[in-house]
Length: 87
Image (tube, rainbow, N blue to C red; front, side, top):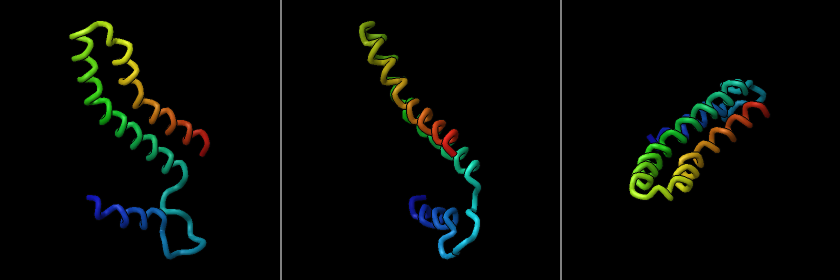
C-alpha cells in the first residue's frame, strides 16, 4: 500500500505536463480532504473512546479528561471543513 502512494500522487498532480488542468477539481479535492480527515478521526477515536469509557467506569472524576480526549480528534475534521470554505 505504501509503495503505491507516489504513483497516486503523480497521477493526481499530473507531473510531467505543463499547463494542463489538474486531475481532480478543487471542490473534489476539498471533499476528499474532509472525508479522509473524518476517516482518520474515527480511527483515532476508536481506541480513545474505549479507554475513556473504561476510565470513567473506574473513576467518575475522569469524565472531564475522557471527554476532552474523545473530542480532540474531531478538531481534525473541523480544520478540514475550514479547507472546504477556503477553497
